[in-house]
Image 1 (cartoon, rainbow, N blue to C red):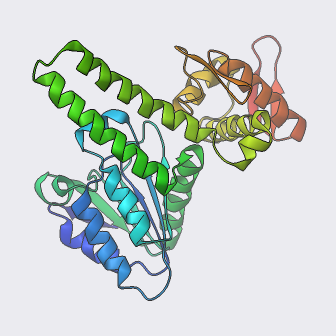
Image 2 (cartoon, helix red, strand yellow):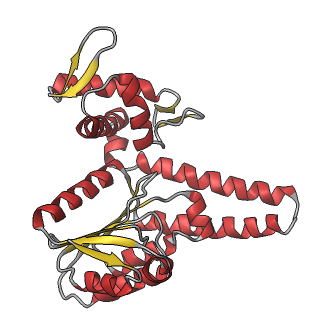
Image 3 (tube, one colour):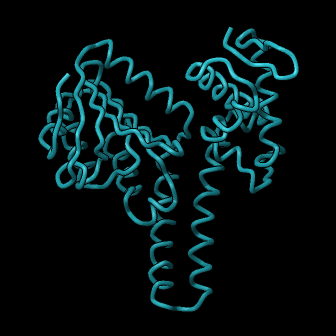
Length: 292
């Protein structure tokens, strides 16, 4: 294990240059210049490279530019093996190259993170340690939302519109302009909710698709925290699936109710996992759940 200090741009270049077949990038804030540096290294490869990007597409980050979603759309075009997943509340910053290097650091993939800020991290080259970190990041990604390139581009256009509206509102232009900004921001958040319910599985059997997502969340929570009651489990699941567990809204998509009814969906998933033999319920009134 090796310590990595600021500025770590040279180390990042070495990391990017060492990628042979696959890489994972996890950071809540990502800007264009580091993305271009990464793409430049990957384009020099004659072989196809799989690149998994995990980030947090929070509307405020897209609007203020701390997450350049246009750069991610560009990256998908430049490196066809790129996938982008949105995970609300992601705070981890980690970078994995194949199975030979994993970097865990305080630095986002931004100019400040690479050059200006006082960051600290470690590079791990032990194969078992690298695989463990890669597996953890992929598990995070499975809890997130896959965002196709076309949706990245559309969210980027919405962010630009919001920036224009915000600038107008800050210039004391009428309240209607500020309302326009809020409407765009709400539309962006709604788009992220819709992405979680996109895809053939949801279209074919929406109830089964949503139950599967709650099942994944329950398995993850029990692996991480051990046996617990439904009451203790609910807030952890709400943090993992915030788009589906919003207490403030009550929306219906393809006949499936989201929002205030999410605790019913947790119970449905628990029943499904118990039937499958994946989890076991123990105790009486204040029963706990554990992995079997």
